[in-house]
Length: 168
Image (cartoon, rainbow, N blue to C red; front, top):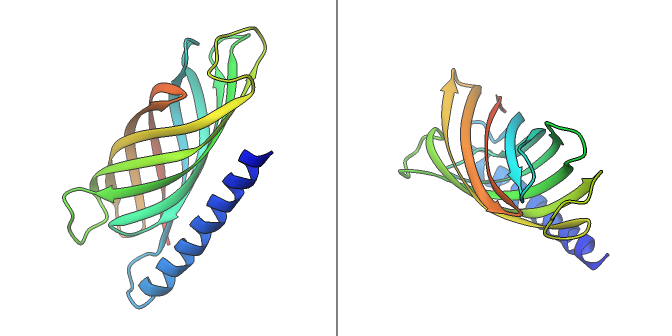
């Protein structure tokens, strides 16, 4: 219960910081936020890979913050299903005035597990989630983008995914 309250507090801090960034950034005509559906293959523990679908929402700046939720479904029966919600901090490299190209991202949040069969998981029903992501943002015009990425961390070994979204 205490971990849930702590996560809610972190999300509230994220929202306050995001609003502050958008107010400071409002004087330019550059997009302030992005929203994107996410598709991903991820490996949790010793289980086979899972396919994940989710959504990401974040600030649109050289150093940006955001929120990502993903629900992973097993490829085979009797494996683990995971709902993962994380906050992220992203930086585009090299640091220039464009929000595209190579990025590095730190994620932190929670992973909630549901298993139909006994499997070896880091915790009974869930665990904290922390990881590093590297990807590339391709701008498709002034408002749209695609981002292939790979990630490593805990409680998963790794993952690879793609998100495509809109900047507003």
